Length: 78
Image 1 (cartoon, one colour):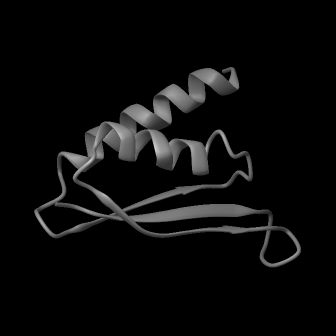
Image 2: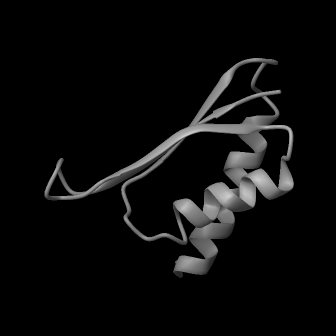
């Protein structure tokens, strides 16, 4: 699968999962990638299409800090 296809799939999963979160709940998005297109850009796209949601925090962990490199973002449902 190409990266663009994976990013589209990630966006769809994130959007689908958002519908399952109760009001005031939390949604965590995580990848084992350090590509901005899968991480920070994905967070920005989600917030653009779900403007009532808030990103409480996001963090990338590089191989210098932890394991192979991960990214996570925590969203708060409206």
